[in-house]
Every structure is written in structure tokens, then in C-alpha cells.
Amino acid sequence: MTTPVPAPAVPLTAPVRLERDGAVVHLVLARGDSGNGFDLDLVTALRAAVEQLVAWTGEPDRSGVGAVLLRAEGPHFSVGGDLRAFAAQGSAVGGYVRRVAEAAHAAVLGLAGLPVPVVAAIQGAVAGGGVGLSLGADLAVAARSAKLRLAYTALGLTPDCGASWFLPRLVGERRALDLVFTNRVLGAVEAEQWGLFNRVVDDADLPSVAAALAGALASGQVRALGRAKLLVRASRLDELRDHLDCEAEFIAEAAERPEVGTAMRRFLKGTRRS
Picture 1 (cartoon, rainbow, N blue to C red):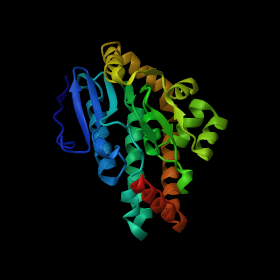
Picture 2: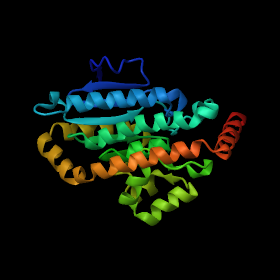
Picture 3: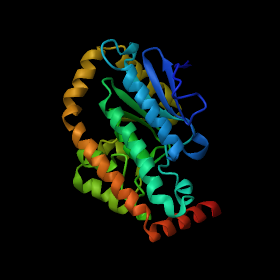
């Protein structure tokens, strides 16, 4: 059973929580009733939580933290950007989207650079920014209900949260462009075959399997795992940082176009009818 970690910057009432289970810290997206959509409130809390993880996992003793489990409450991991929050900004939407992207990108970069393994537990919809956040984890365990869809270009937007950086490195350029251009939905099994998920389990087993994996890593040779992660990822973190800056610029610019606002309102209207 998890217990709260003392973290004044990330209170238990926030849309993102930190909880501790032995040597594993759970990073929890806690707005399940709204699909864990990315608005400024959620991503600001996410950035603060990751900053706390960076502080805890610093040398020399890492505060006893051996692994991070990224998980989400509710039926969906994350539906991506909160389009209602975006549409409500009116003519200020570009600046708002940029602030959302910058906060989310700081969190993605921070997770990718943590000196301990990060395991993601994924269920239901994984869309938009949720895709990039999940791909930023080192390992991903998915429930059979998981369905991955970028969805950006359907609204006239461009990818963010590192999705356009991680995808071609994991699945190759052709498959990455297929997902970006067509917004096709990948079910859990196909996503596993493409290398986006490490394993797929029954929905009921997801919490225990993901926690067991994170626990096994946290109880192993943590320093060696951290150094191995550094060897695999560190040389590319500067490239990721620059790429995230470009993604933030592009999506903020796209959000200001009138046709994008129209597409968002049309989508939201259709969602309300359904």
C-alpha cells in the first residue's frame, strides 16, 4: 500500500501526486474524471513533481529512491491536451498553449534524465501529449484496453511532449509519419509489436505487474541501472531539449490559426452530443 511522500510543492489535492512505496515513488496523474487532460494546472503540477523527483534522486544516496512508477487514475492514461481549456482562451490561445507545452516539456525532459528507471503503467486512451509523456518512460507496461492515437494533425496542430522525437527512434520514420499523418489508432498488442510497449497484460493485472516491475528494478543494482540509463540516453538529452523547444513553438503557432479554433470547437460540440 502506498503512503504519501512529504512534498509541499505537490500537495495531495493537486492533479498530480507523489506517493512512496518502499524504494519506488509513484508519479500519479490524478485527474481521472477528466481523462487526465493536459491543462496549465495539471502540467504545472507535473513539472513540480518531476522537479521533486530530480531532487530526491540526486547523488549520493538518491534518498533511497530506486525507481519511479508513472501511472494514472481513471479509465484513461491521458487524453492529451484539454481542448476545452484551449478553446476557452479565445485570442490568447497561442500563449496559453505555449505555457502548457513548456511546462509539460520540462517534465518530459526531467523524467528522461532521471538517474533511476522510470516505468509507465498505461490504460485506456493515450493521446496527444499523453503519448509523448508515456514514451519518455524507460519501460512501459500496457493494459489490453490501451489505445494510442496522436490526434494532433486532425485538429491542425503539431505533436508535442517529445512525441515527434521519440517515435521515429522507436518505430522508424515511416511508421512515425503514418501515426502523425493519419492519426490511426494503435491497439495495445500492435503497439507492443511496434516496440512502443514492453508488455501487454490484462487490465486487472496492470497495477500489480507494473508495480512488481518497478519494485524489482528498485531492489536491484540501482547505481548500475542509473549508469546504464545514462549511457543509453544522456548523449541525446541535449538534442531532445532543443527538439522540445521547436515542438512548443510549432504547436503554439498552430493553435493561433482560426481554422484550428474552429476544428477544436467542432470536436468539442461532437463530444457533447455523444
